[in-house]
Length: 286
Ligand code: OGA
Ligand code: MN
Image (cartoon, rainbow, N blue to C red; front, side):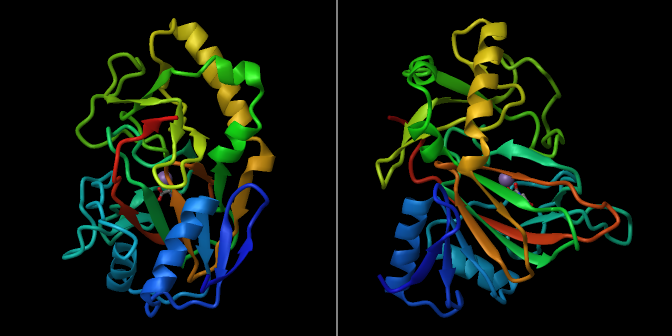
């Protein structure tokens, strides 16, 4: 161990102390990666990362995805296709410079509507509103460990359809025809319980609630079971609530967590940069 860490909560997250991510060495990068595998989320405060430095650091954790196109159809920063902007700020023409607006971003894990979703996402704070806009992380290994056996039995061996129609802010994704029928909506089927590719730990893998469907189940039954799973998965004891400071980097493992964001005053400014580390393998059944 070369890094100094402390738990964020008993069930999810570690804070990594005293590092400058622009200058960490190879053993520290390896340590960071194993901390992320173990704790499912990492917080590193006090960073000063240009877009290029954020991308360069992120790349040390794995191959990066190109950023998804934002809600206005723009691929964000010129020359840095890996950088995604999460912001409510509007440019001189009144067009949003990033995604997700100022409303709530409901519980989700990133891009699970793809066959091979990103392994991890890294979100870096540049401008923060004086209140609201907190980001919550829920640990899905802890949630599964604490799940009543009867509930678990109902999803063993099952797959869940993860919707690709709406993003977590409720916006329709670029090029998609809005629908509320999970059977015909774009998306991917993934095992409800997955095994982490490196730690081998099992986790509940829910993706997002809207338009979700448990394969092969009658819609009403599927909805009732999903509601029970979501109520369990987002219980406070599995969550960490992050109050942002400028210079914070929060990294989450998309195979082992959910996250959400509180709404904030639309007149306030919030600017975040995000990268995503590509999925090395599709989510596999536990
Ligand atoms: C994201 C996301 C929440 C936030 O970038 O994937 O969900 O707090 N962001 O901005
Ligand atoms: Mn997200």
